[in-house]
Length: 187
Image 1 (cartoon, rainbow, N blue to C red):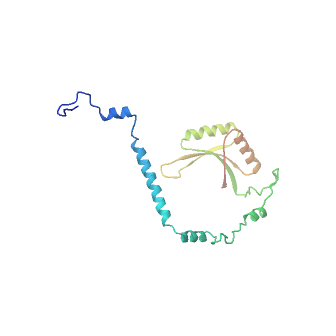
Image 2 (cartoon, one colour):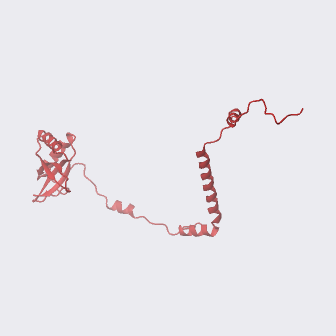
């Protein structure tokens, strides 16, 4: 049967999209191809670098690590901190000694303060001071300017000259959920 190519065919033309839909084949996204190319390139570069390494270079690297060609290592390092820590052991008694003043030396011209807060707003400092006064603690506010155009209001409890009074104030603060910082100042 002969065919006339001058005449157009009477059937419908199919487009590329229609052929893809029929075949069920879809292209992978572009980022996947990019990632695969980068990984293959890295693998090829790594293999090229390995091919340039000679066995002599491997032996030289091993000798720098402290091993010779037979695998024997050089002199092992000695660590002395095990014996140093054992020799400097300090045994702490279970109960604190009330007469022991070695942990917190007090000079005659020094007093201790507890800083319980530092605020930029004076109202916040005043409200904490009022709370401390309700706990029967002597509180004061100290205004400090560490930098130009900056003012801080520190809330201080004290001064304390003896340790039992300081310990009592600290325990009252901690029982009420207030953290404190111990400061030592000259009188």
